[in-house]
Amino acid sequence: MNHFGPASGMKASDIRAPQPASLHRHLMGWRGKRALTLWLCDLTALAIAGRVAAHFNQFYSPLPPPLILGTWLGLPGIYWILMAVIWLLFLRSGLYTSDHEWKNYARSGKLVSLAYLGALILGYFYDPKLAPPRSLVMTAWFGSVALVIGFRLVISLVLQRLEQAQTRVFLIAPAERLPVLEYNLQRRSRYQIVGATPTAARIGATDVDAILASGAQEVLAESLPPTELASDLYWQLRRAGITLRLIPSSLEMLHRRGTPEVVAGIPTLRVEAPLLGGWDYWLKRAIDVLGALVGLISLAPLFVLIAIAIRLSSPGPIFYCQERAGLHGNVFQMWKFRTMIPQAEAMQATLESQNESADGVLFKIAADPRITPIGRWLRRTSLDELPQLINVLMGQMSLVGPRPLPLRDVARFDPWHHTRHQVLPGITGLWQISGRSHLSAFHDAARLDLYYIDNWSLNLDLEILLETCKIVLLGKGAY
Image: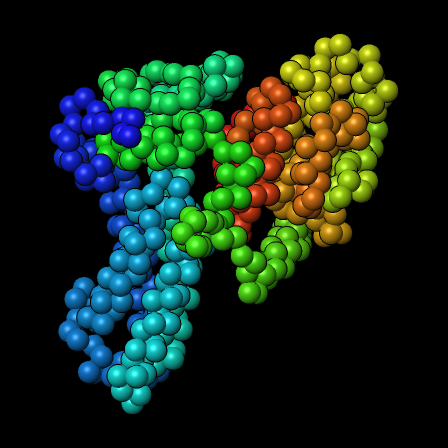
């Protein structure tokens, strides 16, 4: 039985067929402009890499004439063909069209490498004697990877600044969750709620008509009805060019990792262990150690200046060590620059009644009387966290991960909160870039930590580090 039927204003046709209005919205709207900007960014990065490689290669063996295929804008035709292949790979992987995938910097580097590797293999089988100079290929290859990733990192910051228009959102959630979602979304200036409906046993054509009439650009949904109805809603929204965002459960996060397969006529999702699992984690640890070493050496002069400022502002030690819960709940000493008066811990018990945390798990006071003048500035800029690079070198922390919390907070955890202790804690994490001190309840922060654990990748770490740098420079959300 069709629970929906065609929504108002839609001609009855195959539900997968796009509507002219949705095509126009994609091409002429922000997503189309963003895709064009990204394409120009990638083209520029690849062209620069090619020109630099050609410049350095002129001192070695030249490119064989049969491989040149003409020259345009100072680049051989064969290189333009390679750039077209890279562009098609990017387009096929959603690096221009998907709202999320275009930030997948690691994948963009992998696809560039795949194109170069494929070109070398095809060239060898076509004519081994026409192999291009290794000096040219290696310089262009590594230069392309570095510049494409670097340009995309920079352009992501620019695009975020330009994307000022509010996103119109329609909510679908259980009745008791609607006020919470509305409150959280209204605190972010990018989102404007244009309608809401409670999750019911079924979502029919009337609800779809309400979504279309509201002018929503996105639908944020939680606890949708059974699969068959959710699938209908997905295709109706896709046909109208409206983005669907699902608030996932832990099970749905696990589904995301699965590969669709039909077994004995039953649709399943296969979640398989990788053949060479663990290499990305060891690469993460190598980045942690290298990043901590570079950070400690390069920031040494800043450390000295901060130490002098702390000494002059109030009596007491320069550093502050506190017991925190780390991997598997093991206790370790976390280092920070001191931002409070020496008697701060003794005073905390008397200040518990002023705690602004909604559930009492965290201890937060915006105007904490224990913070010193220089300490308030250090917290606002997050410079007080820099000594934790020592914890990273000692293997107690990572650059990115769930924040280690004081034992006082951990003692108030619900059982499911302890899942965050299954990975190394970090100096920064999703919690810090998604609201920091503005998150009123620890449940919200814990859900972000679980999302990070379930969806971890090197690319996600890179995104978090980039966003952290932006937030620290703007001094948002910390006190």
